Image (cartoon, rainbow, N blue to C red; front, side):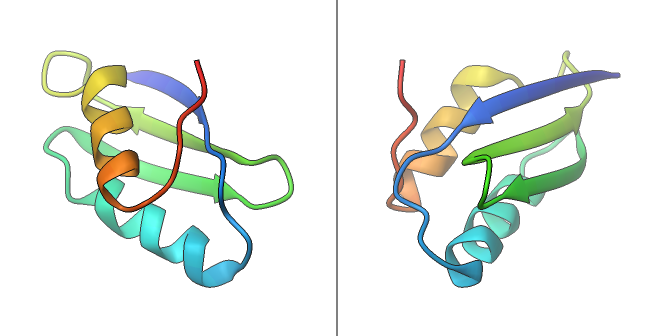
Length: 69
């Protein structure tokens, strides 16, 4: 099990938090997701053989948010 912390730009409300959490929870291998509006980040607990940073970045960006470099 691994934990990835991904910075997220563009969140302004709990609706944004819920949107990001929802798309990340659908990714295979993800066991839990915590999204912090205050810290502007998503913490994802996952199986590294099934998912990783690039997949998380793509899902967040497709949901309309930005993942800074």
